Length: 356
Ligand SMILES: Nc1ncnc2c1ncn2[C@@H]1O[C@H](COP(=O)(O)OP(=O)(O)O)[C@@H](O)[C@H]1O
Ligand SMILES: [Mg+2]
Image 1 (cartoon, rainbow, N blue to C red):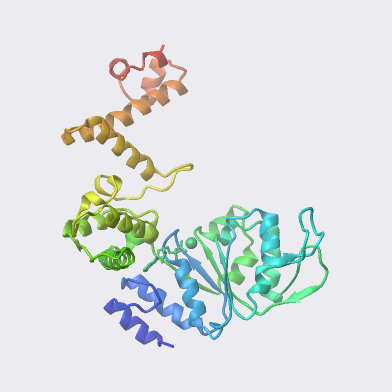
Image 2 (cartoon, rainbow, N blue to C red):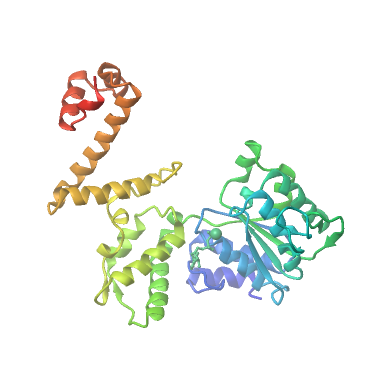
């Protein structure tokens, strides 16, 4: 196994020290160091970080670098299944345990015996299942759904969360005792926007990979591309970057990758991530607005800013008018603008039907 000291040095030189992981930002060096250090131990590991930051890659590396590497690596996405399906997925069930249980079924914990089980999106697990999981962590035992026979397993548990579990505890959605059991060795994967110096390395790495997969020569990447990508906020982190690199190769018809081959929202808008709104991120909304603004502004790109701002302004006025039941004096006060100004804007944006 690579020693932690070696891992840190290689990380600084930017070489690949965890299988498939690129980057040498200081925060990543800490990830590599910890991964190497804890892989050989049986300790439970909790991976923390936004979506697409590389938690699954680290979970796999923990397995590969461990003495269990010849055993199975089993991943379960706790966020993808309902409570009862997840319970039988994890622990198995016996025939007749519930309506559709026509056969006995082995759960994923049993399948992971001698290896590693990776519980992804652990923050989504229900309170009831959390109790059952706590017992596996404490006693390495459980029962299949509908059975009284106790099963013992020997598997290493690696869990991942994209939410702050202490917030979840405060909100009453996560058990504190389970948190302490899981949080033996936490490894934090920093968001890509906090390691922008790694972006060129990642872009080159993915460009090479996709070019090879497409059987074409590796195109050159213009410097503007790196400048652009370093100022984007990357809400989807490395996964998002990977997708855009693939897209740029698909769209590239010559041997040079230029910024226009990247999606519009990576080019024109707010580099700061303002947090996700329910039902669609602010960034997605902005990117749609920019696309719409470009379409509406036609050939004249100098009009894009004005178009986008007026699209936002029209929507804002429309919504405030609706919440104020069309009463203009009320809407003007709420918007903090003069009543005459509002009246003029209503005319400009043809919102007369909404106002009274
Ligand atoms: N440091 C990295 N170097 C290379 N590829 C990475 C890196 N981090 C993430 N990836 C890639 O980005 C994608 C998302 O990573 P993943 O481990 O699934 O993230 P998470 O589990 O945090 O959502 C995967 O395709 C993965 O291979
Ligand atoms: Mg993931």
